[in-house]
Image (cartoon, rainbow, N blue to C red):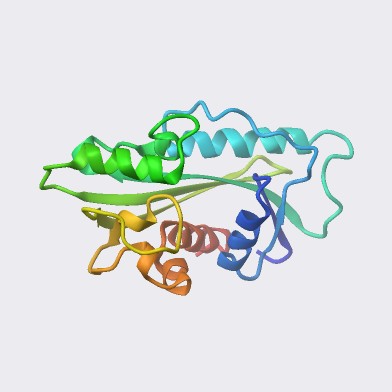
Length: 204
């Protein structure tokens, strides 16, 4: 795994920094600004992550597109969301736009709570799938992280984003918005997926 460089298929610098913290020992960089991400037309988290990773790799194969870095370069893309058992796995890949294309986090949470009103089963999980593609060979490594829990009756806490205010991790009583950022980053779906990816890249 020596001299491994990962380009994250995102224009979000904060996401690249987050994965950099979750993947110690690897140089993690945002993708070049000239790269365009494809539309997410997949039916699963893995399909959407693979679409993005493969598209970015193809663009990096063009002359002069690959950054001048020392090491073997991989492209990593992620797709993640919330699966609620009583809703048949919804919102799933539509988590970010559950209440509509221009929905806010509050809109999405409110729709989720309305859908679950009166339901006894509130089990759910956050899912993150990472697809990593080697630019030179096209070799692919896939990692998934599941963060089990349940949906609260109402939002609680002020930190975090998305569905964090209503997601209670398994064996805990506080929502993700009520726990520390350090604790969240240790047990989250992204942390678990990153840990799995790191083990695979190390050959373990």
